[in-house]
Image (tube, each protein chain N blue to C red):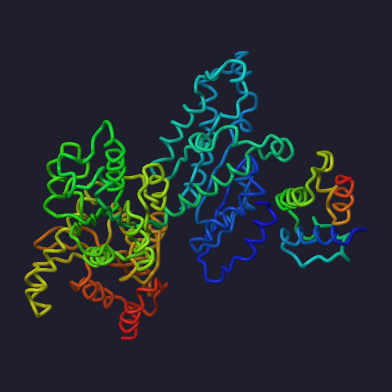
Length: 81
Length: 531
């Protein structure tokens, strides 16, 4: 896995969710259980799309599809390819 | 700017000493991810820390909102018409409903929300009016209204309900300003019900900040105007009375329009002063005799027309009118003068007059839309008669003899409801003789509902003029939570008489907030409390 991308995703998640800082060791933590609201979700997705200069498919725009750092990583890697 | 950069900037704001303001945003669409970070950045400039709570329109009556609504400093309502009324044009086209029925239905929904908020909470409501620029049918029918200007008719009805006590924002005008093509984001509309573009959301945030400033009376109080090439075209001392350009046509039209704008500021409570390198008699001749002058001498509270340094003149105006430099805007066409003021009087907002940009620059003013002509005239009269008071003061070494010569009458009485608005305004405008507590009209009304709360108005008249309501006192049980006196009435012993009222109560505490100019009042009142 690309550590830089994982760190960037963690940075953006941490900026938007008021909870303990997530590190790349916690990529499986369910973000909706640590306080990610629907508005936080929108902010995170938009920030990631701007950072990685890609737009993820609308079918992935569900919290259940992107509720962990790992899922975000997988979707965006796919998107960037 | 990318959202990540914006969020980092927000994160870096050092807001430990900022005033907190809670805003509840009720909407049926999403204005994120930009609304909250934009608001935080904009308000940080005025040292406010904004906490934004976003509530879905469908959930506004939910009990889960009670706590956040109770602590709210401002409600903002933003309802998207397209989401609220599905497929309105086809509903009308097939005769299911007519326009009148739709107007009534939409108005009823809005009325229910507005009345719910007004009945339960004493907080200002900023309501963004409906807009229908999203409608795509103009591409096939041309720029004609398919629904009989339905949205405009609803907005007119909303204005009748809302605009007396609260604020109805003209959303269509906001969109027109940035351009319809720039206001929407189709992608975000279909992804997460966020139909508006980042540019438009920034405008919404800017408007919320504007209205917040108006509610809290954060605005300059005075504008000082140069004359040559600001109020008229040309140089009076060179071109003469007949050679300056001013009028409804030709070269003088921009100055004519600018004077009209300044007069509007005057009618909304801004004090006008003139600072010009000219002969005073020549300038006053123009003010009093030029047919096309909109601004007359009677509107001007202070003339500093001489060949002296303008920076010194501005300081004198500040002293004569008892208005702090940070509450003054200065307009001049000379870059040299502007730069000098910026260097030596950095608190003053110095604006270079440019025909095309001046109106935008004057956005620094945030003025209530309601006009009280009598109050404005009283205020101007007070400022102009202050010079007469200063002369009288100079004639009497003894302060008591001066007060006697002034024939002053100070009337302190329990405040009437009609005086609440002025009291709220006073609490927000005063910086020197105040314990620093600022209240909106809604907050004053809320306080006076308590039996233990005593609110006093202070009126002053003297031989020169009626100064009107220039002070207020608020006592909540044993706590002093309001004490303010207008700078217009300073130096006459008004505060001493107000302090005598405090002796009638057993006050053992006071609420205090520093304005950086009110420490001496704090010490005086603390001494009174201890006694």
